[in-house]
Length: 295
Image 1 (spheres, helix red, strand yellow):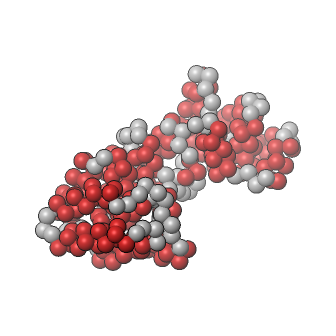
Image 2: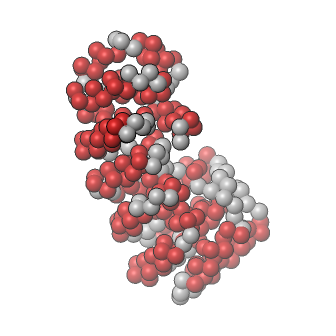
């Protein structure tokens, strides 16, 4: 557990690059109190009071510091964290790693924290100790319909892809679709695609169509490895919408599949294929455009 304690300094360095000396002195003082205390009160107080000293603005970080963080925490995306999140992560990492007392304290933080405090805790899951013991907490957190908290777990976070069982992973992705959150920001989405998820996504698309509602185009990324006649019929329906963004997604899914009958369909849409190649359309650009224009 020494690794996490030592690496807390990296999060302090993130704060150094974006904050005034007064804020840095305050958090150093609080960190010392937390380390020296036998009870969690100093952490509770500092965790709450941090909002007085640190802003909800994205933190600036040098490439060197980001690289150092990635060497300790694979795929950690702190570029999406604000300064307040980083400050709260630094404070939590001062807590001694005695498992029973640590969980008593962390559970209380989770259960009593406001939305922004929960955001910080869930986003910090990949850097906290006792990772596997935190899986139930992360899964339980996904029950929320509040995007701020849901996004902290599901988006830009390596924890779900690393630890979630398939059923919970599928539930998370489906809820992201239901909430219309950007799928391209779910880490390792492609590696964890599975047939059960593809079938669930297809059923959801059919429900949306039956209700006369639009399907988020990123959904079709989930069916690519499992392309068959049924999925291909769905993509043909998407192509009939004459909606450029939806059609881009359908063609991109067909291009990336190994299903030979799907390739024959490409002949009918040379202009879209050319547009995808020329403008370098990707799932990220499709997802970004959908978020910008539809959500």
